[in-house]
Length: 243
Image (cartoon, rainbow, N blue to C red; front, side, top):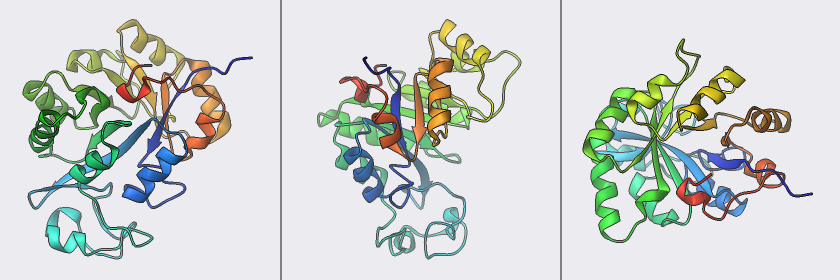
């Protein structure tokens, strides 16, 4: 019996196996078979750094708010297992179009520099189709669309709007990213009726992974890529978000 299809997206790399949002976590996700990876990106001190939280304490040996630090200080920190906080450019070069990359924009002010960096790498041969940019800040997504309407957008949401996924369609999004805590059949069906892909976060338990498949989700963000890859087919062209 053939396996069903469900796209595996490594959440912050493979964060249940290696320190999140580090190059080690990304390499681990690839090793475990994830053809797509999600990371978090912030604009700090003129640099695009890969980091999730507003503060440093949870994942590094540093202290304070991320936005208040110098790039030099951030690079001096241990982000887990001797890893440093990487830059977006380092992540893109490490992946080198071999996997799909979901860049989640945190806060504000990252849209324009991210688009500039992507344009520079695309000019050198990077495959733009492997890149998907998402955010809870839909103003940032609107700016991305204005700057480069060829970049795929993923609209993040926590909750269920009255009009389901209309907001994502209005943004010109490629996909909508609901929380596991809220997604239901009506939301998935509405997204598909509008031509949107549905990628659900964060789905770690096998029974939840199966439930998302039964709802018809196109993919899941998970800290355990092996739990998805073992039981669900990953298409050869998944790195270009073709599901």
